[in-house]
Every structure is written in structure tokens, then in C-alpha cells.
Amino acid sequence: MSQYRIAVATADGHKVDQHFGSASRFDIYRIEDDVSAKEKTISFGNQEGCSGDHRGAEARLELVENCQYVIAARIGSRIQRYFETQRKKYFEMPGSDTDYVIEKIVEYRKRSK
Image (cartoon, rainbow, N blue to C red; front, side, top):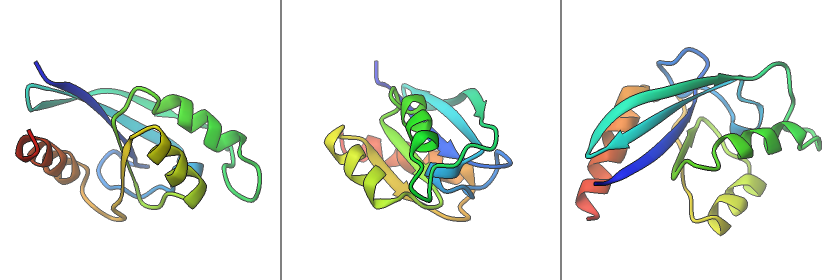
């Protein structure tokens, strides 16, 4: 049985429209046997992850710890390097439809089996 999680930075649950470090919301999807289901939504207050204050980004990193994929409109280079050390796949897909993104990752995983 194949199971993994995808974190999507989205303000409205429909579009990838948030920068990882300052995202106000993440939807977490669980994929099991190529079937996706939204597991939970996590909302953040007015935490800042940029401008040299990395506390906001660190809270978001904790959130995606159990996710194998992270999708955001933008992901800063420091966070990208961290994901690479953790062997997480990340994609910058600004404006993309959330359902489309999830579908494409499921297809990618099928092809790479």
C-alpha cells in the first residue's frame, strides 16, 4: 500500500497562491493507493517568515515534516536547500489549481514506480 502526503500553500483551498514562508494556510492531502483526500487544513495568524525573521518559516517547516511533497507559489532558496537535505520534493506552481496539482503528483508517482 502506497501512502504519502502533500502540503499545498493556498489562501482559498482552490489555487496555489501563497509563498511558503508567509503562507496563511496549508491544505494537507493524504494519498493512499493513488486516491487523494484532504486530511486537514492548518491556518496561521500574521506570522512573518521573510525579512530575516525565520520563526514563521520554521513553524511551517514543522507543519510539513510528514509531507513528502510541498507545493507553493514561491519557496525561498533557504527553504529549498532544507527540503533537499530532507529529500522532500517541492514545486513552485503559482496560480495553479489545487486539484490539478494533486492529480499531477499522483500521475508522477505512478510513472516513477
